[in-house]
Length: 240
Ligand code: VGL
Ligand code: ZN
Image 1 (tube, rainbow, N blue to C red):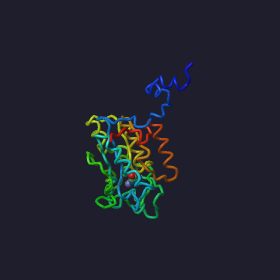
Image 2: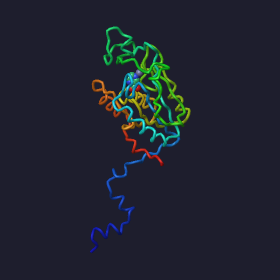
Image 3: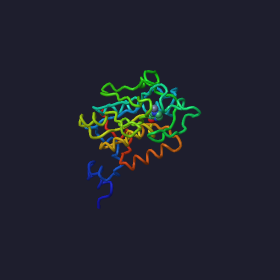
Image 4: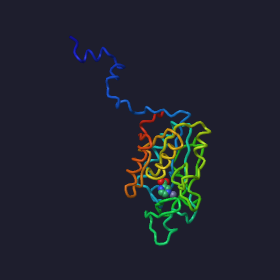
């Protein structure tokens, strides 16, 4: 009788592979095509160490994004781009402190330290980003009385940035979202991308969150419910 080793040897490596648990082959199975776009959200100095609204470990997303971007022919970046005295700044509301919430005509607004003021160094994209093929930079949050976490729609829920129309006219069907912060601009962008009809992937290790009062867990739950796929950068095939 053949023993187990002899049977396995006879099967050869291809058949052997089919016996292994599928998780062994989960790595690098997603291959972005010309109908895919990487959206790099708000990798700006204000959200990086030393910035006025620094996201914990925010700098760690940069090498992950640089590597992953090599797999994409379409890359769009965003820049949070506020007026001085923007409505989302606590400093614009007397007696209010950062991370408190207020009611505005379009709904609840978390108040932030002043950040990403137009034309300032804090609003610049990180100098460590290396994505020369990036084709479009969308600026958002530039209306003084309306915030815009999402790269698609301002916080009034109706004013568009033009991004959905741009992507559709370029025949993009699926978007991969990375950057800062997971629970605000990344999540709102992912949710609006779903509403606009795109297939959406959020690359978890290419994002970091702020996590203000449970906002990170809530964001992942909202995204899961909306059909956003949560993946890791290692799931994306990048040729060397
Ligand atoms: C962001 C808070 C305020 C973000 C922007 O990029 O997630 N968060 N403005
Ligand atoms: Zn902002």
